[in-house]
Image 1 (cartoon, rainbow over the protein chains, first blue to last red):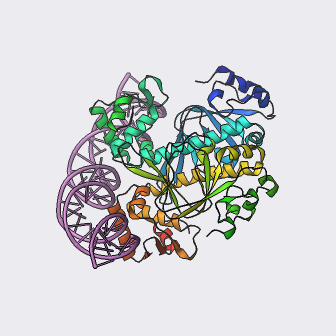
Image 2 (cartoon, rainbow over the protein chains, first blue to last red; image 1 turned 90 degrees about the horizontal axis):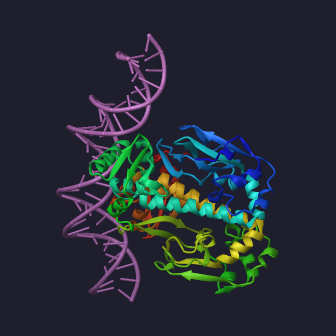
Image 3 (spheres, protein in one colour; image 1 turned 45 degrees about the vertical axis):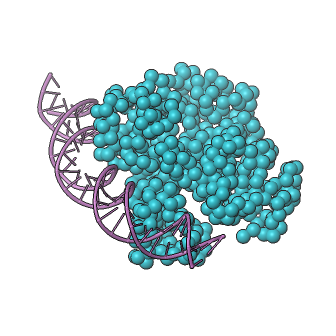
Length: 236
Length: 236
DNA sequence: CGACAACTTGACGTTAGTCAACCACGGTGG
DNA sequence: CCACCGTGGTTGACTAACGTCAAGTTGTCG
């Protein structure tokens, strides 16, 4: 949830100091006085479930920090299939490529109601050359995205369907309290694991029969992560 | 092939000016006078096929620019399988994570004889804060790695084996003249596409029967890329 | 020339994809 | 308030694709 201070359309930069997401986001560790170097407002936006934050090949002028909700980055094959290449959550950056590339590389689609801060890319690029902390943060975010990609390649794209689904559930439940976590629709899960919706549905039904997971509403699930990790032989 | 000027164990920094890989590597666009800011030698190394440049979890002190050859970045699953998450070639950086993380994230294994320049990571980090060109290059390399990861997720990890193999061949033949390109062993191909060696072998045999590709020696192949692209419906 | 590794091929089993029907839920409008 | 519809999820029967196990074959390098 987002603090009330941030809950307006425009923020003066000083208000970033109060942002509850700041500690984990792009401007973490950046000294308040350095934040003042920014002279244009940061825009705060709320995106409804299912709508696009930006599109593939669109001119990339903004970077977004995700405050709340879940966002998928989607790519399409010439054969028509789609693949979800990343899934972003609180504290993650969407559209980092705005700093280096001219166009966005994916469709960014909200999987839930999503709130973001919209930061002009040129500002980030300029400031990152002046503020070492920001420079480091940017590199860290980039590295983090790469690590996640590697994880998806090794853990979510190999092995039998049961393992893939379980590894996704483990990944989804990271940083979630109460063993309870967001679970996307079957089709989206399929597009992350390259499985069909039917296979995903059957696999989840199987896990449910075996008592490994519990469904809560259409969007959420609960599971004992350590048990799941044992199944796929991860160290707890 | 590497120019004779670089063919010694240590290089003074001034000699980087003469490096034939410089234009496409980390120090592209960096002004010669800025290169002089570096005061410790860059080490030039040659790695034999099959040996490791660095290991997973090893302390990450150096970044490597690849001059020649092919290098695979490998990750392992707790179940024992391995997955090749990236394949580096001339101009690519190995071990960029040295700038941000403490340890290397993969095993880096030479698939051919490989030559690299070994650059202390702290130097790169420091200079990247002083030299805007280097800063930009670093971000670009990082972005490039991410884009490649995305490609691998969408193009090399989905669809039937025939499509995956063809998409890999297309990717391998990029930037190669004469429609002739490096083709890794069947097992390595399998570990990039998450297929078994047998399936890869059968698929390649099939492509050969259909006249789509031609094998040259154990390591190389030739193919008409446009024909391949048509099969997987890529725009030429 | 021999030994070993990499590659190939075949027969067979298993898994996931396909096609199709059906169910459950939430929202809409009569 | 309830009938209706649409979407997303489930289930079943069948099929195609890939994995597995087990021989062979080729190639390479000392």
